[in-house]
Amino acid sequence: MKVILTGGAGFIGSCLLWKLNENGITDILVVDHLDDLKWKNLINKKFTDYIEKDEFIKFICEGKVERPDFLIHLGACTRTTEKNASYIINNNYIYSRKLAEWAVKNNVNFLYASSAATYGGGENGFSDDDKNTLKLKPLNLYGFSKHLFDLWVINNGLSDRFVGFKFFNVFGPNEYHKKDMKSVVAKAFYQIKENGVLRLFKSYRSDFKDGEQKRDFIYVKDVVDVIYYFIENPDKKGIFNVGTGKARSFNELGECIFEILGKEKRIEYIDMPEDVKKHYQYFTKANIEKLRRAGYDKEFTDFKRAISEYIEYLKEGKHL
Image 1 (cartoon, rainbow, N blue to C red):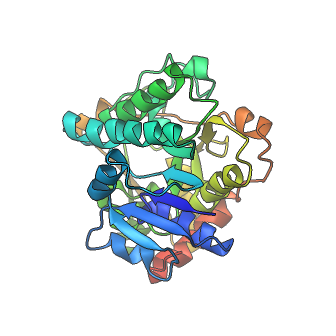
Image 2 (cartoon, rainbow, N blue to C red):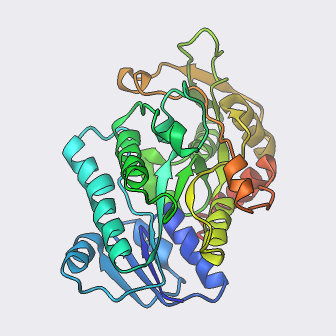
């Protein structure tokens, strides 16, 4: 099996690379843009070559890329606070569209990363049905860029030709390079370890108490299991939510980490920055009925066990 994996040095991408290697798949071209930390995600991984993302898109446009069995596109600008619209649209929408057009032209299986950020405030629910996707109103530029590509896929009749993944709140090893975009699990661990205190955003809605904002947290090992299922079953197509179907509060997450570390619970609630207030999701929970109908029946890792395992990685700075 020959695979092209964009974002292959990133968080989810490098974990998928690990998963592919674990299953004996090594004929992989990794595409990414490295920095002073991200390169470490490639240590001990097996792949045939690496190319920078800007060079790769040139080769795609010039027809110089050898046809793979799968083009898995996980590369993107994932900064939810990014304000440069041209930059993020070029990275997340136009780049994705060019790869998708090439995949169609060359009859290549195309899998890509979308996001739960496309659901905005959740006023239209969290169904990944295509008809519902058409109604969504993302709250930030990142979510809009991902939604724009989902719409392009649907409007061009490609949702039964591609596989899209609406990732919810993913946490786990190999996110060390993400800085302020790390998962809440990682941020909470470092805060509690260094200061013995967890700082969470106050709530500015009367229907949510401080720290009771909720997310669908999913372990990255579960995420790559889902992606690998669609590699093993290339006849399954569509845009799917990738979450556990359960919403957990930030308070619950914090209490879990305090317990695992054997420390007394100390949570402080801090003001939310003004630019975050405007784009803040108070609740997310994946509807995973479509994923189950597609045949994915594996149970997701228990919440506490996943956090406990991840904390062991964080303690030593270990990678998958």
